Length: 258
Image (cartoon, rainbow, N blue to C red):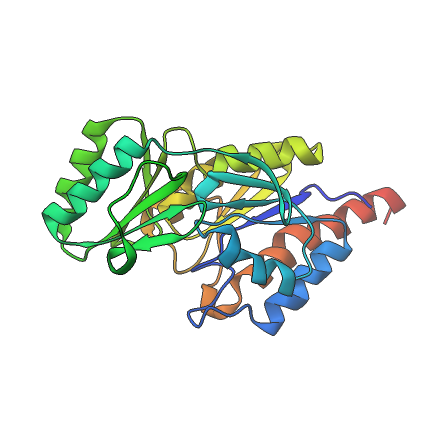
């Protein structure tokens, strides 16, 4: 029984997780059905490995993972395949911008999440993966975006309408999922990618089937092949039921002549 789609790439916040940061029992049940049907399920998230891992363990996933928007690709949980680091000079410049605009910021290094409360000002000597800003002031966010674009060498997305997430240029979830496909011996045409924010856009555009959640940002919905229910309405269960297991059943039917 061979499915048309062999890999399900799942964003986490706003997609796999509901607003209470929970994977609902119904979604757990359908993910298990997909796994039982031979479909690889890959978490593809802006989160760090350490904050994504408990959910992978809850779901019993031993498959590759893409974390920090593609800055890390894991061959399996705890087995790092590739890590892309950000220039500490750029991190210092981004920190200075956060101070200039007096806005909330955070940065992921390989050792910790750094925020205002625990930022010690040291950028050299650390391995940096991602930098982020949050502001509900549209004008500040726009000015910040222009200055980041002028810096060059950066991949700029978001995980909500009010933030900006910055990775090294060329590092994104699509590049990460392509590497996962190579590890698994499959093609991007065999991937279903699901998400809700701009950090999901590239992989949704490049996957065999790109799916936007009902709560997704408008740009993501416009680029997706399909739109399903929101993260609070088990949209992932709908993806699996409609677009993956139906394909499995259809393939099985074709093989048996039914």
